[in-house]
Length: 152
Length: 152
DNA sequence: CAAATAACCAAGTAAACAAGTCAGGTATAA
DNA sequence: TTATACCTGACTTGTTTACTTGGTTATTTG
Image (cartoon, rainbow over all chains, first blue to last red; front, side, top):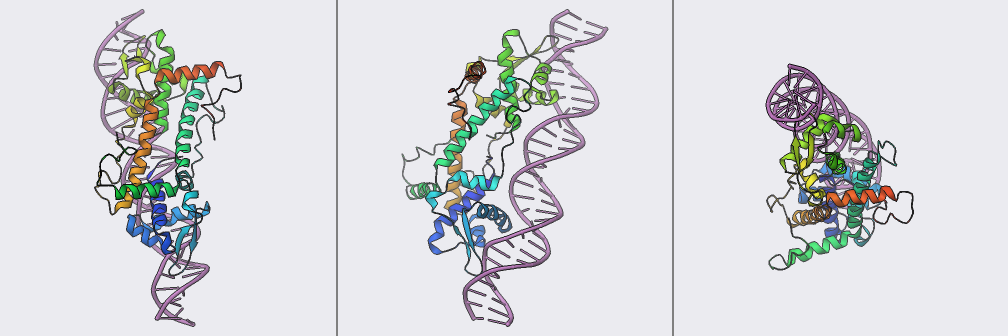
């Protein structure tokens, strides 16, 4: 799993759809305008998201994309995985080209970390993320509320 | 913070030094041979590691690099940070170019994640990582020991 | 039916970055 | 003084990212 702008774009777009899904399908043109992402680039990303069964499409006027399943069933990790297409081909896959033990050991350290990230992102559903966002939006004028958001 | 091969190389090299530091300074040529990393590339990385005060150098024959401080005082995050030089210039830094609230909110989601990663890697010292590695090396023939290392 | 809409699709491109190379330095121990 | 090993900067190469171009196909609306 990689964490690039690509994944951010995908999550942002899914956010947008989740926020507007009660108004029917959301067109990529709308998302492009609201979120400032190139339309043609969105098309590429949604081709992948559709391939993973995260969204479904409706063609023609009034059409667009809508969530294929409930937003509480979609994990942030699913969205990122869909557009990243990285099988994370690590250097010493399965003790293949290990020159000694040390290489393997740091490899394991690395993999355990990426597992942590994955499980964290897998535990957050799109619904949770959006509702968290709403809470923050509402309480943005209050203090003592930023416990999960403090930044180094 | 980025997680690339660059960071892996740096951690691997620091591993190597930590494992051999009782034999005096470790030359980059040795690390290069043992870990299969290009010597000239290692030189670039160690220039950065030295700049951060993680290692100190000894020139001349028999010279090399040694840890500037104890391995228990060096966090894995320090090593990665040293070679990554990424201030993580996020798109909407400080609500600068936010078109609406949504962009900002996903940005926060992202930043809270990268904070999680950072705090995790900050909590693991080089000493801990190396000793974990040793435990695994020793017990590599036993079952029921992989609790922290299970892979998806 | 025609025209507008919007999803689909394939290929190409400019810039950035990673990884590694090359060619020289300078300090120090033997 | 010579070999060692750090030190430095510029350069190459390959990959990826973000984005563009130029279409085709399906569907609704007037």
